[in-house]
Length: 176
Image (tube, rainbow, N blue to C red; front, side):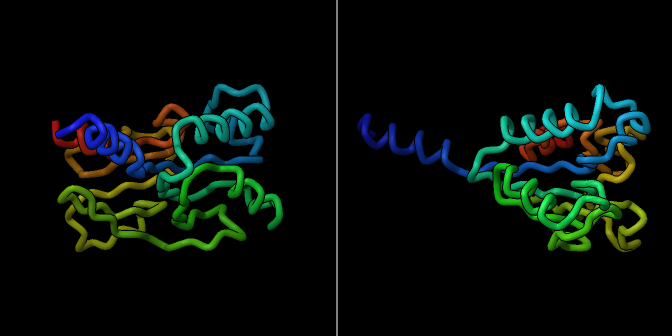
């Protein structure tokens, strides 16, 4: 293989979109700082940091499955749309209990590298018949990031370093 072809293949590999997951940013929600013991002085600092972390982690061509509660429900439609536009990536929203003005799914089944994942905001909405992995949010800092015994992955932002997590990294963790 010549250098030109190798260079092209490397560039193509880098251009493949990555898949990320996150939930429960609760932008514009001042009380969430205290409720979840978030390390921010105020809602402005929290909003700025969460949006910056998202955009540093997610590229414009990447895909993000957002599992609910993007922005506090008292925000207006225009504010919600402005926030969505400010975030990198193609966003697929799963409805959380605080989401308004966002076109979203109740749940989503994702197949990736031979694994099936049920994406949902709240674990109380998992069908009893589902036996594979579940990725969810809603519980914030309660519980573990990955619970292998129950096949549960909590991508609430408090458990992922306040940034979206790459699905490839999740796969590595559940396979090891």
